[in-house]
Length: 171
Image 1 (cartoon, rainbow, N blue to C red):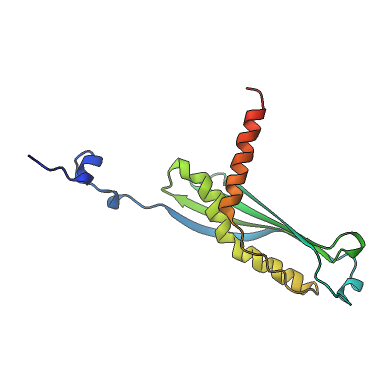
Image 2: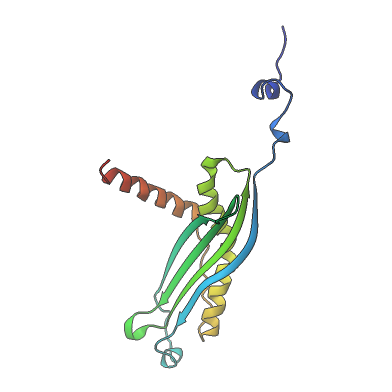
């Protein structure tokens, strides 16, 4: 009775193993600020006499597109919006669109979307968070330190919304 090596059985018996395959790689080619806006419409009055912390609303969005003329390069953009206060009590409003160009190599097609919408923004987030903190501090306020974001949960919500939208639309 002969025994078959599992690696040979799964690779056509040629003795090659998955260890010889090139592993998936992510490289950040560049990072950039595409758009940055800071408003404090009620300054300087709003900078004095604050007795309580304002209500702060934060919005997050992620977008990704292939870079034209390249193979495996993707432009991933993380958009962060934050507003402190409302109306006459508006302290500040800040919007940042922070991007990065990523080279993705050796990823199976079914893994591309999760990598683009989870892993790439996770790598960009600390830099975008720092920009938001610096801008609000330079605007005369305490630095806005955005809590870590669960990009996997955001991706799952987005995919569920997309599936629901497809079910609603007629075929």
